[in-house]
Image 1 (spheres, helix red, strand yellow):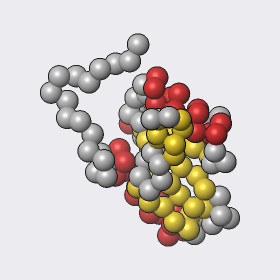
Image 2 (tube, one colour):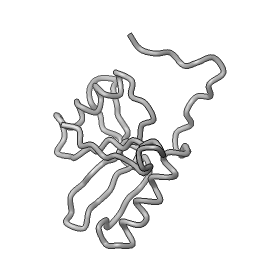
Image 3 (cartoon, one colour):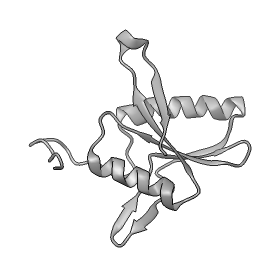
Length: 116
């Protein structure tokens, strides 16, 4: 069963970054500055997974070696998102990394887990 939006919770606005996405973008900027990444963009690529089913990762990146790697930032995971992410890596030759924020008591920062 899917969770419904809480009453009064604003709907996500495409193209507008939330706090978690803004924080992770700072890490991507530092990776570009260090030469690890050649390019990144927010919501740059949408993948068609099936009839009337699409998935847009938060960030698409091009690593210095030419690899396309997408990043999805999540505060919490809903089942439909997990299914779409697994479908993406099964259908397309792209790496997808799930980015989640660690609690301050656990050292802060982010954990990055590759979806397989």
